[in-house]
Length: 58
View 1 (cartoon, rainbow, N blue to C red):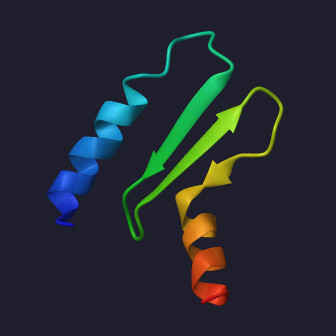
View 2 (spheres, rainbow, N blue to C red; view 1 turned 135 degrees about the horizontal axis):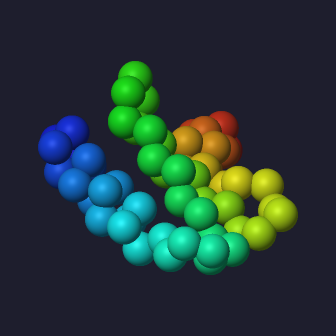
């Protein structure tokens, strides 16, 4: 996926987080794009960690 498309999708996702909401999204673009979702006091879940797990267990 082109970087510009990924940046647009991630920007749209962050715009869905409401102030005061227990759900937070963190987006990083460089050097490696990632999207992390955190709910209340739970540990964040990141796309990069999910991909790493999938690649480790073919």
